[in-house]
Image (cartoon, rainbow, N blue to C red; front, top):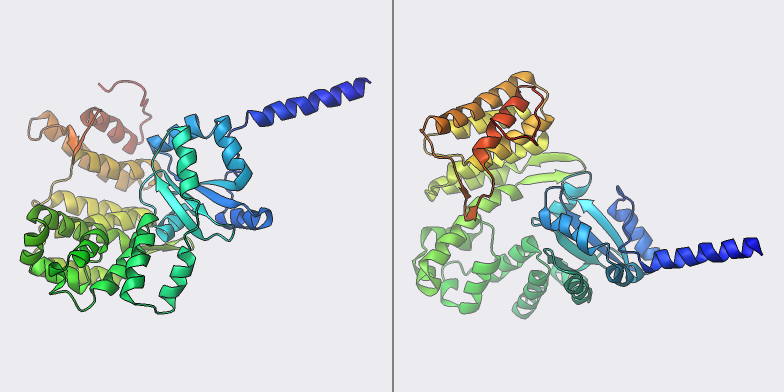
Length: 390
């Protein structure tokens, strides 16, 4: 009788626990291929939370939304749930493969590991559940992928394919389809509203003939859609291309040197004002991902010593942080500390103004106050980041 009572009590506790359970995620460190294997065995779809450790909305979702009972009841029944830090382990390679550049990004896969939908950003529990459901409808993108791979380049198919790709934020594949639609029409597409839309929304390769022609002869497109819009489009195309030239696979990182050199030469030919900043930003990113700290500091120094360039305070601090956290070379750390010390001294002496904005964002913290702490850390001193700077 006593055993029966104990067993009944345990079962009741298990039931109550299950009823109050939020989302159940695979153990930390689970590889995506392992989630696919489990999905195949269970017939469930896969829900992937692409996050980073510094992303505020990611933390909000993990703290406030995922633990809710109604979220768990909806998700656990139909999905294998997995979270992957896009900056650790296999994360960087998967982020490149799936074109994840904003966080959080949530991707839904079928049980074979084929993407069927995605959405971005934080939300409340009810909206999250709705968004998951809306993006879990397989629109047959894998079938369209196969048609593309088989060589279908009919205009009707390309426009339909582009719409499907756009809904899942597959920007690189969108670019390839845009290139196909604009092929041979570099000098005339500005007169076609549909093709103008394809160019403005989806073409992101500055080495494409349509982009090059527009960079050199922007008048027709500016007349159709506006000077500000075309200038912004060209600026994005030039500046964003560098990150696509950094290749990461199987734990190795390298630069697509051929296209990098073409890009740099073309920016010079087109007299792009931001060309030197774009070149150095790419090399700085490459060196950081390769953990080549000698080259990393060299490129930062080159950027800082260029009289035509100006490193914002926020960017300089971002560049210093990986050195402080990961670089073990004392000489390089001291050189980085000297660079940041110079910036701090210039602000204190009135040669520079302390920056309160970064692009369109108003900064809430005091960047200048952080500088002495980072400098001290670079010099090997122990710093209490919880205490105010002197």
